[in-house]
Length: 413
Image: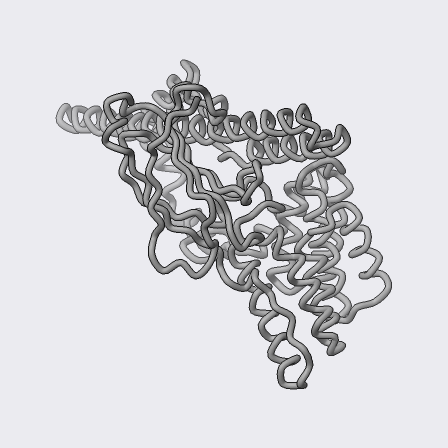
C-alpha cells in the first residue's frame, strides 16, 4: 500500500506540472502576440491621423472630409481591437485563486476516483450511459447540441452570439427558414452600432433568399436594400444582387455588383466573387457583347527586398523599428504596412491586400503605388528628423515577376 500511495503522489505531482506548464506558456505567448498586434494597430492609427491633420492644416482636406475619415479610422481601430483573440492578457491572467483551483483539481482527481469508483463503475450504470445517443468520439450528436443551445436561448434569449451560432448551424444543415428566424433574433439583441450588424443583416437576406427556394422576391429585396443602406459594400447582399442579375442574363450588371462586393471581400469569399465575375465575362464573350475589364481579378502583390546602405549602418541600433509602407502615388494613406526591426535587414517582404488598413484602401485598387521603408528612432510611424528612409516612387501592383529592390539611404531632415 505504501508503494501505491507513493506512486499516486508522484503521479499527482506530474499532473500538477502538466497543468501548470501549458497555462504559463500560453499566458506568455498570448500576452506577447496580443500586445504586439495592438501596438502595431495603434501606431498605424496615429500615423494616419497625423497625416489627415496635416492635410487639413494645408487646406487640401476639408473639415467634413476630415471628420468622416477620422471616424473611419477610429471605427477600424475598434474593429481590430474587437477581433483580437478571445484570450486577451487581461482575461487570461492566472491569479492566486486560479492557481489554487488548478492545484485542488489535480489533488482531487485521485481522491475522487477512489471515492466514487463503486458508484460510477457499476456495470448497470455504465450500460445506461452507453445507451444514450452520441456522436463520433463519444461527443454529443449535432441534434443534441442544437437542442441544448435552443434550451439555453429559451431560458436566456438576450444572447446574440448564441442566436448567431444557431443560425449558422441551421444554414449549414440546409434548414434555411430556421436560419432566417435565428438571424432575425440575432438582430433583435445585437446593438445596431455593432461592427457585425450589417454583416448579420446581409446573412439574413441570404437566408431569406434560400428559404424562398433561391428565388428573389420583394421581401428579400427590401432586406438587401436595408443592408446596403447600413453598409454599401456588404458582401452577402451584393452577392445576392449579382446572382439575381446573372440568372436574368444581365451579366454586365452581375459583374458590377460582384466587383463592388470585392472591396470588402477576402479569402474564400473573394475567390468565389472572382469566379462569378469570370463566368459572367465568359457569357458576355460568347454572346458577342463587350466584356468589361476587371483589374481586381488580378491579384495585387508586390515583393520588395529592403536593405540598408552600409554607410548608414553605424548609426542604427539593431532593435530599432523598421516600417515598410505602400501608398498611392502622391497619396499619404497607407494601403499596406509591415513592422519589423533593423536586425531583420536585409529582408524580403510581400505586400498584399491582406495587409490593408481598411477594406476601401487596398493595393488591388491601384495600378501603381509608392513603396517606402523607414527606420524610426522613436519607434513611431510618424517621420522624425534623424530617421532613415528609402523610397521607390512608382511600382506596379501586378505583373511583377521579380522582387523590387529598396535601399534605405536617406536621412530625414
